[in-house]
Image (tube, rainbow, N blue to C red; front, side):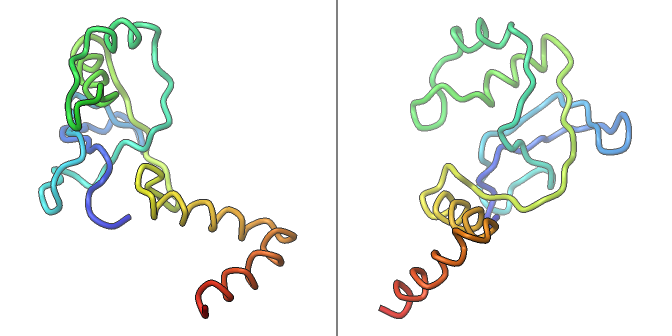
Length: 126
């Protein structure tokens, strides 16, 4: 992923290999200001309390209620943990990232890839 589009964990402390206790998060820090190389990717197992927290969360960045703000509140009230994973990261919240992810996953399906590759070549050559 280019830049720092993801929310970042700022104060993770490792509790076990690949498992982190998280007490602070930053929503989409500006390029070059990310406090760590650990990001929040949008796969969560959350307690029911998050819904009450989000109801009381004021709009943040972009005038929208940010889940990251709710997670920050949750981290102050309860324990919040992150699990480090490996793999390719796509920013599906970005138009180009969404298209890239869609194409990448389509190319992993042999039958679809056989039809898609020529279409992509035509588009790129056209």
